[in-house]
Amino acid sequence: MENKFFIITFGLTGSGKSFVAKILNKVIKNSILIQSDRVRKEMSGFSPHKKVIVPFGKGIYSQKKSEEVYKEMLKRAEKILKEGKSCIIDASFLKKKWRKRAKEIADKLSVKFLIIAPFADEEKIKKRLLKRKKDVSDGRWEIYIRQREFHNKIDEEEKKYTVFVDNNKGKGEVEKFLRNTLKLKTLNEQKTSGSNPQIKTLNGA
Image 1 (cartoon, rainbow, N blue to C red):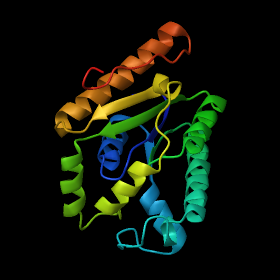
Image 2 (cartoon, one colour):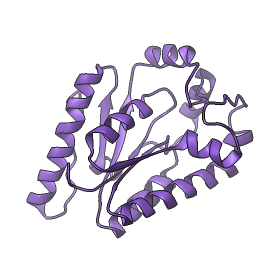
Image 3 (cartoon, rainbow, N blue to C red):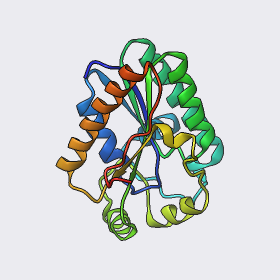
């Protein structure tokens, strides 16, 4: 795909953000993937695969550190977009202010912007988190529970450029849906001269 995109993921830990982001990185030609877990550990002096088990909101996952990580990711994304490449940020983006900042960057650079919000049954998320071992993410079930209490949900305005992806589906079906979504997004923008119509979700909602 030749069109330039700036895509961020949204969702609680275990919802499948990294799974979807990697598919997007494969599907979108000349795209660069930024992973929050890698950036966070890089900035903290840790190996990407080192497990860092700390309480919710503490240590390298403190609010202060998260602020630094999101600023750095958006800074890197803007540089990538200015170089003429597409960019995907694999992160929770649970705070609306960071989603807003990402969209501002896309608008400033006239790049197509999407929030990709994967979701899955809670039981599947729990099993997925309990099985995690050799993974860059430090997401755990107890973190999921706390995030569920403290996050800014996608509002009505954001839904206009958000795609909710049913991550209960298989990889092939998810990839096909994402490919079709990006094609539809491009065609709709060409027809409406830059407007941002809402895209249907995988389960038809």
